[in-house]
Length: 485
Ligand code: BG6
Image 1 (tube, rainbow, N blue to C red):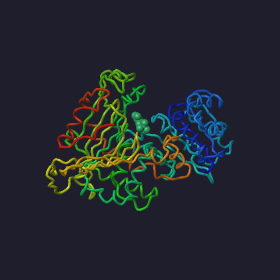
Image 2: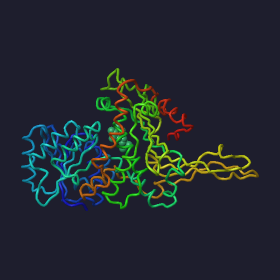
Image 3: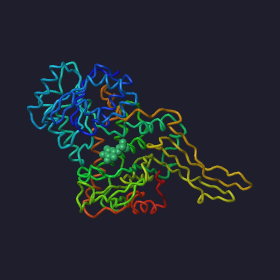
Image 4: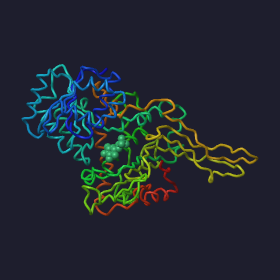
């Protein structure tokens, strides 16, 4: 069980709080990861009583509560309070301080699940009111993405936070690191001799990282149009998967070593110049189509999106990692919305055998071995290899060996945030981003977003696998994307 603490959520009226944070707390209560020494203080602009706030959480989440978590919610419910306030007003923070002092709040986590434009005023407000410093208790800060919008703003935000909070009390959240299958990349690699032994340039021809979504921008048009898929997904989620996949074995599996290994990896990614961006990146925006039988309108017609928008809803890039393990092995990344399948995966394609002279198969005609880490959905790992097809000839034929999480483990009853919140409460930073890593990620992406300020994304039909140019990016290297789904 985590130590007693108050979780102060800024943005308590928002989607994230209702859809992910509170359900996670319910799961944690049910699992005994928190107990009745834990409390929540929701902060948001609208006037609401505690009872109304609790009700708003219930209204949204009835399904989950009925699902066997009713008792846990009842236990948590009484520990949930609410405070209305204008977070841009300094007066609010003295009230918050008074309230927390009166309640005898010791340990606390301030969780920013709110528009990034409010990060700095909130951090300064908390700092100036002395809320980050309480004798004999921890005061931690959890920050949701986006952490800045480029390297400069990320650096400025880090500096701002560090004025008030030590690095060891800052938890920069990337919710992909809460996913079991993303954490499993480390176990797959570092608990299995046969896997890690071939995990390098000698055996691997190329690595593909895909985060494909069927979701379109929906009601997030305004946020999305100002952000775009590149900045929404790549320096955070895709790079976290990339870092887990490509980092060197950490000396220890603790926060300092793992974060160091990831930082070193990001530092080895070649920063693209203008010519690289032109050659090695592709952006797309979806046009009208059907996703899983549902009609989806063109991106530019979505609510909140400018009709002459040049924002991308799809990004694909080829990156090089300049270190001993990976020199010369291309890493292809792609992510997009309104695609044919929801599919997040890491695919390692092996180099061919050096020589083969079967009557009906030569090296050049045999499909490559492939290891697929299926992150979501249908979580699992599969290995494509060749076997002899029965018969008089020796005919190497592609077959697939498969491990499915569902056959061994329960993955249900979890949002991915349980581990993250528990780790914040217990002070384990392994699954959170260090300041320098966030800045390094932006440094790689910045030249791309800069170049993409001119020109336009390539259209792709909603419900397709993405723009044609993304296929061409690999065809040029005589390679292909692993099929979605
Ligand atoms: C968020 C992005 O960080 O991640 C969204 O802002 C995206 O645009 C989401 O849809 C994907 O997360 P998940 O957990 O649904 O795969």
